[in-house]
Length: 134
Length: 137
Image (cartoon, rainbow over all chains, first blue to last red; front, side):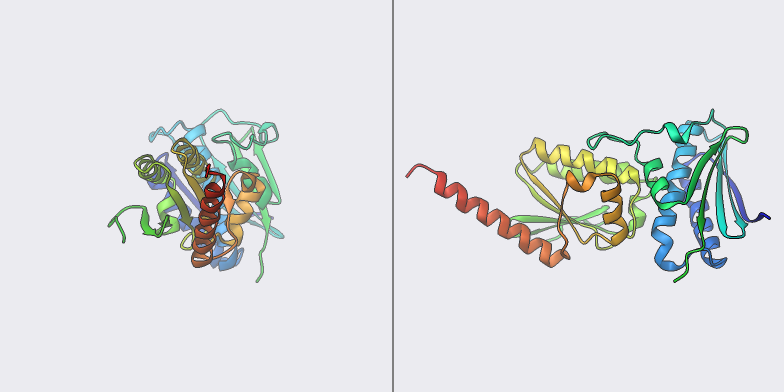
């Protein structure tokens, strides 16, 4: 069973994105999915996913929106980030060379989340993690 | 002596080491991360041979975009024959460097600011002593 406990959409600007990011982190804390100690790595994953959606999915076009939802799926919390772009294959994102300037966001998400995949039908990045107790 | 009022990084000279303290995590958000890089690169480029210790004590986390800016800063430091060291990294931030293998590219001090500054200063003194030995008598 999946229960969405947070949903927001915002125009593709970083200013709007940071507001939603703060709201989402607050919701995860309130619902007990993370504790304060775990906030940095969860915030990091959310930011990476949202920046990708704004920048690569929607080309920074403020007329396009990004949708973020958080769902309680029993043992796991699933974060879904949906943009209006063409999508990408998470598994084909290569680990960057040390001196490469970008391309590390997905690697970081893969490290901190238990599951990461891109649902091409829904044009949606999904990532899940288990409840983080103290 | 502090040079800045409303900058992202507060630069302070202590001996031969310039300490660059990043004010809070929020200044490294997607909105102003490029500004962070521009600010530090401009500072470095105006100071050939600068020995910069970037202090992360007020930073809870950093994204991949910040890593990209740090790579820019590192290149700028190399171009002016300076040195860059990082200190006061939280567990999560250190983990981010390790995951991305950037802990092999940057010199990261385990210590807090005081310890990192002393270590950097001492390394510079040793370097000077070695250079003096190599100078023709």
